[in-house]
Amino acid sequence: MLRWRKQRGAMPAFAYLRKSVVRQEDPHNSAEAQEAAVRAMAARHGDAGSLVLLSDWDKSGKLGRDKRPGYDLLWQAIESGTATAVYSYSMSRLARSVSELTRLFEACQERSIPVRLEADVVDTSTASGRMTATILASVAAFEADVAGERLRAAYAAKTARGERVSTRTFYGEKAGEDADAVLAAFHEVGSYIGAARLLNDRKVKAQTARLWWPTSVRVIVQRLEPSATRGPAQGSRARWGTATFRLTRLLHCPIDGTTMTGRRDRKDRIRYVCQIHTAAHVRTLISESLILPGVRAEADHYQRPTERSFRMTGTEDPVADERRQAL
Image (cartoon, rainbow, N blue to C red; front, side, top):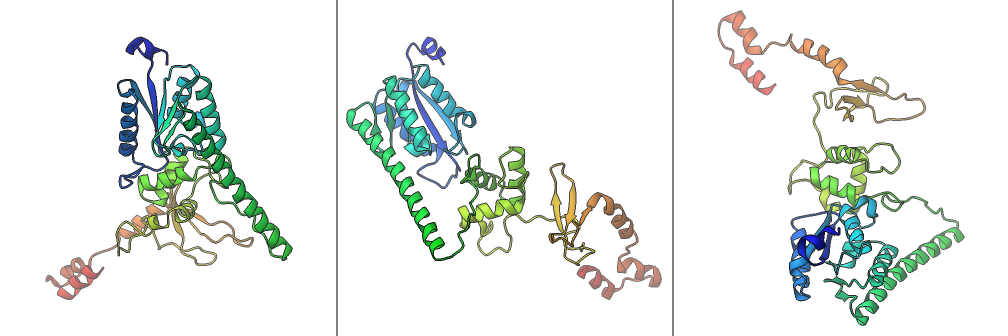
């Protein structure tokens, strides 16, 4: 980071941009809108010529320095004293944790580095700006505490009435779980199956299972963004997450007769499984590579009706041709 002094002759200001899910139709928090806002703000304070842009796109604000490369570089510039100012669009772009924001503000204040935010109208170079930042951080902490108290009170009331209190937690509420990454993967590939593969490749932590499955992705996406699960086009019968395999709806479980579902594992092998799991029902799995040669051998015996009728009569059969078209 110290090379900036040698190359430019002056220490630079840094701007940090971030968004968990980047969409072109989002006019306020898009990459272009954030960059334009921080550049204009830096120009007003005379930092336009020395501004260094750092960013973490498709990264959650709850992640720490080790999982946000741009944010880690920002901290390096602050700790080394290289940065003369820090610009960002809002507090939520810097971090989603009150403790992390407080730590960042304190580190900048110790080194006399002003933090300037566009949407929150914060400038810690002034006494009023530092007070505003402290108030906003305190309000956020207060809202979190009140929400926790209300939740505990609701649980206590249900327990007093003899009602069962559910201990279920949604994905993203525990440490290490990143619901924004799941939604971003879904929007990137446009299907539940593709999103599950992408999350497994990126080694994103799953909630319970060791690997991501399309059904797990669907539950999270439907909870966070129900409008995204309506399908790629209005009025279309197509659905997100559908996939076609060679033997779709053709194989049935030998135990209960249930239609078997196609799945593709991480080694790109196609298998058909039965979704019914009980103590008396062993897990049924059929590998496509094992049965496909037999299916192809059987298909080689198939003859089109027109070919058979032409050999027998020497003329084309219009009825047979219609049957072939129907097939």
